[in-house]
Amino acid sequence: MSTNVNEPGRRTEEDNNLGIPREIDTGISFLKIALGLAQHRRIVVGITGVFVALGLLNAFLSPSLYTATARMVREVASGNIPRGLSGRANLSGLGINLRDQPVGITPETYPDILRSREVLLAVAKSPFYIKELDTTMNLIEYYSLPPGSVEGLLQGLMKVTIGLPTTIVGLFKNNSPEKDVVSGSGERAYSAAEEEMIAHLLADQLSIYVDDISGVMSLSITTKDPQLSALVTSSFIDHLTKRVQDIYTDSSEDKMSYFRNRFDEAAAELEQAEKILARFIDRNWNPQTAQIQIELEGLRRQVTFKTELYSDLQTQLTRIDLELKRNQPVITILQAPFPPMRPSAPKRKRIVILSLLLGSLAGIVAVVIRIAFEKQMGNDESRAEWLEIKKIVSQGPPMRWMRRFRIIKSDAK
Image 1: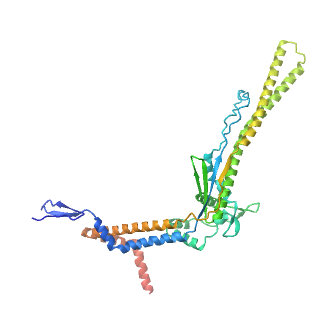
Image 2: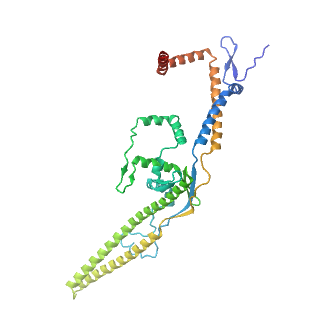
Image 3: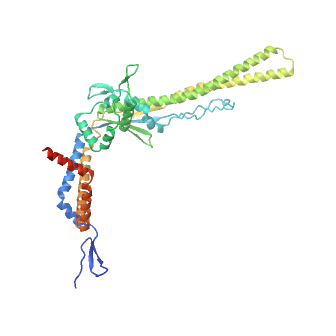
């Protein structure tokens, strides 16, 4: 009596006609994978070596980047108007409510203002001292300079590898250089494409973090020059402050213009009421009848009411003007930006370790695929299918072109 012991990764199935057990392969066992890795270790080592070499090139040829950080507190006034004002204007039917007027700017809007096109372009057009060039220029001119030899080499490799589709698409676009346009003041006027490019570039270099608990906002800028990083960060703070004040001033002017219009209307109504009263007295300088006296008292009440309304609006207008000036938003700098001593990128150790892990994983996957392919080719039906695939591929246009090229090359020799 014989015992049928199944091998790992196999199972048996009874034949319907003869009843003889038949082995059926269910997959690749762990031991086969380990054996394949030992036999094809050169493939794993080779692929890992390629990944590590690319990682080393990226780590040591990439330029060092420096990040400058500033921390600030955003303070915005509540916008409440003093409650010691007379309520006569609110009850006069004019619809004037002077209390709890919103200022229109909250601390939550500051990151959006920083990323706005107005602030980005204002920073881009500001002059900065570039230490490596020993000159002063704005960021649009600085980032439009041709790259160095190492950086140009990396960019070229990127264009023919990862960025190859973009490079091919760019060949069919009209990339003719635009002529420089000079404004009336003698300054160069930049095109919309240049402004859009520098706005996106600065937005990528800008990092904003807001602590929801303390309300402290951190602003960081990353460039290749530590001094330039600190200068650009300071410029962002200056233009943020200016932009916030401009927005607040525009909003305040809108509010003030409304109250000035109401005040002018009250002054005109008071003047008109006084003229009507004066003409009535001139015509009836010695009123004798009761009707004339009642009309006179009514006109005098109108003048008195409009005088009080005019006085209240004048007082409120003065106080609103002072309150709006006092409640201007303020940005308090907790930590001024300074040139960093150490680069923030690239993380060379992290890049090398990640390349090693990815290369090892890619090598193992390649060996497993090869083992599975070799196992699949052990079947006659699979070999026939593979030969059919090779035949179809060899009859395709690329293979025909390659054969023609070889024939032309051999004839030339």
